[in-house]
Length: 139
Image (cartoon, rainbow, N blue to C red):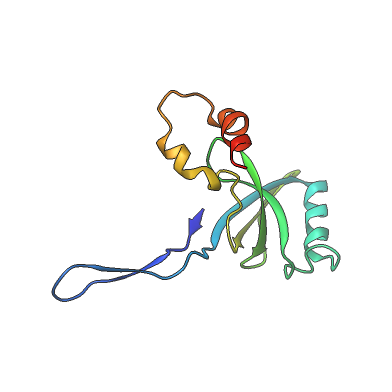
């Protein structure tokens, strides 16, 4: 996953580095690889072309993406940067590759970032605590 930078850095000839916040609206990109059977590859091609679904790559779509944390996959709204490419076919296995973009990451942990950072090591699985202790008291 690659994310935008939320600031602009200016290195002056003399003096300190200047860091200017510019946005909180950050997009993210992923380079994905799909490994399909022949039947799955045929369905993927049809989904990609169909005006009802991906409309030849022009439509936004949702897909579960692993954000690299303990939460596993989370549904993201994505768009292809370029059309997917069939990168290999070996017998009954077909591989497709594409780069996708999201106008913002949907992450269920974002509202609890401060708590996650400040939690004591070895506390255990923090989501149980959030759901049973923190969230009921937030009203």
